[in-house]
Length: 280
Image 1 (spheres, rainbow, N blue to C red):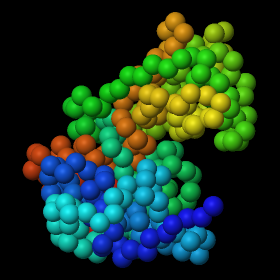
Image 2 (image 1 turned 120 degrees about the vertical axis):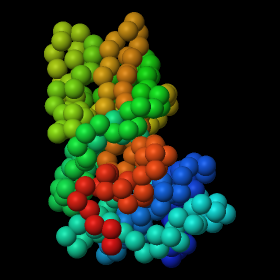
Image 3 (image 1 turned 30 degrees about the vertical axis):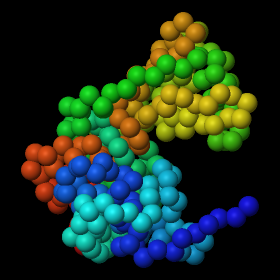
Image 4 (image 1 turned 135 degrees about the vertical axis):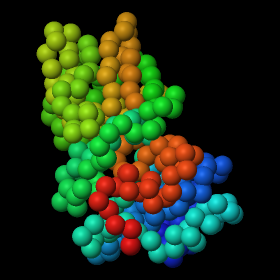
C-alpha cells in the first residue's frame, strides 16, 4: 500500500478546508474564525509530526476536511483577511480543535481527545456557561440501533481498543453518565446490564466503539453523533438520545454562526471558544 501526499503552502490549503467545513452561505466572521482555528490546528500538527511522520494532516474528519482547489469567494476572503493569524498560549501554537455542534456544553481536550500535556491548557478546557447552539433544533438527536448488534460491536472493540471491560458486556439495559466535566458534559458513562450491574468506561471510548466498523457486523448506522448521551433498551433496540455533533472541543461551528448572526466579531467568537488564547 502507499500514501499520496500533497505538499501545499498553508495559505493555499486553507480555502479548501473552509469550503469543506462550513456552509457557503454562512457569515464572513464565521469563516474568519474557522480559518484561524484551522490554520492553528494544521500548524500545530505539522510542528508535532515534522520529525515523526511523512505527512501532517489527513483530508477528512480525522484531521479536517479538505476539498482541494476551490473557488468559494468567502473562503478565499476569510483566509486573506486572516493571513498568518494563529491562536497561541504562552508562546505555543494551540491545536485549535473544533466540531460541528457542542450541544450547549463544552468538552475539554483532556477528556475528549487525549490526556496529552499539550491539551491541558486553558484555551482547550472549554468555556464556562451554556453555548448559543443550544437554541437550535439541530443540537439534539435521537438514534435507534439493534441492541444485540450494539453489544457485539462493543465486545469486538475490547481487543482493538485495548479496553478489557468491553468484553464483559452481555446485555444492555441503559447507558447513563456517571461523571461530568466542569461544564456538565459527560466524560464517563456506565453501561448497565439487565441486572443493573454497571460497566464504567470513558465517554469518548464508548462513542468510538459504537461507531466502529466491524467486518462481521452491519455498518454502524445511524451515526452516534457525540458522547453527550443517554440510552435505554426499548424492545429489541437501544434508543440513544444526545446533544451535539462531534467531540465538542473548541469552536462550535453552529454556535459561531449564531454568534456572527448576532453581530459578534470573529475576535469575539475566538475569545469565547478558546478562553485565554492570544491571536498572534
